[in-house]
Length: 572
Image (cartoon, rainbow, N blue to C red; front, side, top):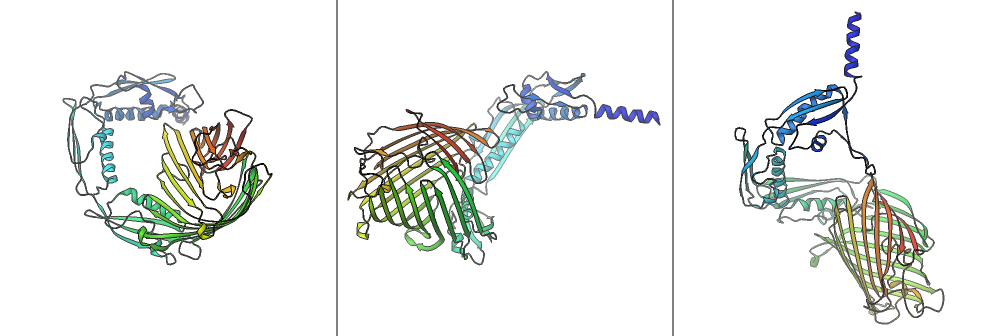
């Protein structure tokens, strides 16, 4: 009995309490040790700020046989079918002696395809044959065919491997057949949401060429309505037709509210409150209220949104109605503004584009702080028809990493409708975002032009810069133009550029550097003014509602001019 107990104790000590051993490789020539450690998950990955490099794991005796088998399988996958491995154990190390043998080499590649697949073939004649790459190439070809709308293709891939001659003959045979089209569309909608609302969000119609991206965009459009708890788009293939069935369920939790705070130098602490009811009285309508309070700007806003309310034949589809009623007070550098406004919007999502057109009614009171500035003060009643077009191909609206964004806005004061001023205003903007090796590079550029016909345009209708979405050396709307009377007045010509580079530094935290450059002129279509440049840095913390951003920007010529910015949401 004592002997049995002693044996069990010794076995336990050997298996559990035995010292850990460091793994080493010998004899490997074609496959480097770092590749073996990484492929077998034997690296301990250190933090980015630790410059000592990665370390290898220490393993128990009972894991050695498993590592040996994994090492053999890894070599066979890499084309070494004659590989052999011996194991040598020391007190603190386990050494795997590898006899790689002769690798299998690609002897020939035969391609018979009516679809361009060259970029998906990872081999050329004379390369070492790697089974996993060959399998992956087949999957990449399938994805490419599906992405281009070929859903009933014929695909054959074959690797003829000869262990005798250590060679592989590869065959790729593809027949793409007819490109598929969207077929019958079935909508199973909730009782209180009309079918036309769902159909107005589709990126495809029956008979359109089939592309899976259109299904993804349709999902995003339906989600943006915030009227459904569940959305499911089933796809069924019949020959070269893809029938779709859309199932949606009504949202249960209709009411939501949130409170937020922010801060900007010279602008102070700002607090915001938002309340909304989704699917308000059915029809995917939305009713919301927003309140903002800060030292220099306060407003209360009511919005009502009714999707697919009107059918416009010239737009070939249904148009949404949105109405915003706003009461606001804003303090600028040299004047104050009180505004009561009602903005009537007609909106249409059309394929890749968003169109917004309508008319703004604004009752404005401008009060100057002094008489030295050439600022039009007093009461103004503005009636301004407008149109806005947006192309948004960013991969995310919340936190984009790649893509482009283009927008154009034009409004005009209509004196024939009773407007106090006659003018035209154009604002175009472009953004480009690209991520390479975890570095996200974002470029934004704005151009603004105002033509004032009756010379009595209220100052707040002119261009100002500064803030989280503009020149970050200044607070919101704190950067103005200069004229003979004073600085900080509104401009009629604007160029506003930003360049930002972000890189993650720890988990969800990223670091950013940026350069902002702004030109403002009181003259119409004049580009001869000096640019005001700013540089700075900031931090971003990723959340489900967008990044939390903190920035500090400095004037490039005078570092005593600076501003702090805190916000939730992306600027690009």
